[in-house]
Amino acid sequence: MDVVVARCAGLDVHKDTVVACIRAPGPDGQRTSEVRTFGTMTVELLALRDWLVTHEVTRVGMESTGVYWKPVFYVLEEAVEETWLLNAAHLRNVPGRKTDVADAVWIAQLVEHGLVRPSFVPPPPIRELRALTRYRKTQVEERTREAQRLDKELQDAGLKLSSVATDILGKSGRDILDALVSGTRDAQVLADLARGKLRPKIPALTQALTGRFGPTHALIIGEILAHLDYLEEAIARVSAQIDEVIAPFVIERDLLSTIPGVDQRLAGAIIAEIGVDMTRFGTAGRLASWAGMCPGQHESAGRSKSGQARHGDTHLQKYLAVAAMGAARTKDTYLAAQYARLVGRRGKKRARKAVGHSILVAVFHILAGGVPYADLGGDYFLQRNSPARRARKNLNELKALGWTITETSDGITGTPPAA
Image (tube, rainbow, N blue to C red; front, side):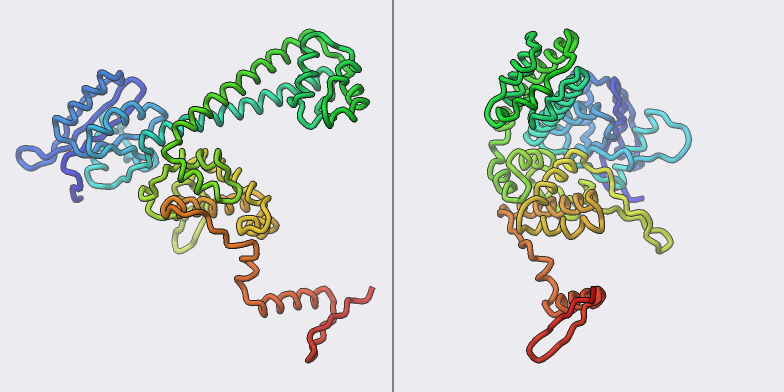
């Protein structure tokens, strides 16, 4: 096979060690390999970097193993001309003896002959934004779990607060919960703490707050409320930091916010996953394939088999699913019409993914062109076909239902079927 990269290296990365193999031309023109093992402490990674620079390595390939590749990648990305993170699924070795050295040599040979392509690793500013948005997402999910635990504990105590109050963590609900934790057990007194729209429901609240609330319930609910307060503060701090980090990308965030179903927070999270430089993907189709938002392709013997999508970026997929459901609830938009058109015959899950794919394609073109979203309109699918064709379809459906259709020079009249 042809040698594509004259001086390259392959790294087999583990938690505590990195096995590196350099492939370079030898004195007699033959390709030679040199293998060394380094630790993963920063000082040892710097030694690895100096060793690669000394041998004038221009491309380094490493397998993505958990999070252990990150410190290695970050040390090398500024020193080596090309530092590639490789998909483990693309590095399958031939069966036989497997060692760390053999893996490093195999990766180096794949890089040497151009048989692998790099995975997308965003630049440092996007990586920082990604870390913050993903952490905020985990904290929001934890807050949701704590709220569910709170309701379960109330149910265990026989208190049906969630059956009367829409939000048990609203102002009224929080006052009632704080009073319960403080020792108040009188249902009438607790119900009288209701505010606003909950005041007319005081009789129902009195019944809902009559139960067997004991000291153990008070302890657990008190801890849950304290944890919820901490999570609220943590989410606020992380959100404030995100606002600072995303400042260079405010224009792109505002442009993405013009897409139905995408608010500024969701737009920032999408930018954190794919960045703002769309030349890294080339086309909208490649971006959708990388994200796992389009069907896969598996053809054998001239027959197409399962078109299951690849795993892709699961975080981005969740963001697009949220955006798709928000877009489906909008009025007179293309995305809402697309969802309504698909959900009946394909189901909610596939309709949601199809709309998410459309949103991702729109994201690509918005970021690539620096233009706001242009909606095709809620009647796009109706206007796409000719009026005459739609009329014939509707007439055929009426005839199938038993209507008698009469065409005259004055127009078309119909008679419903006899009862």
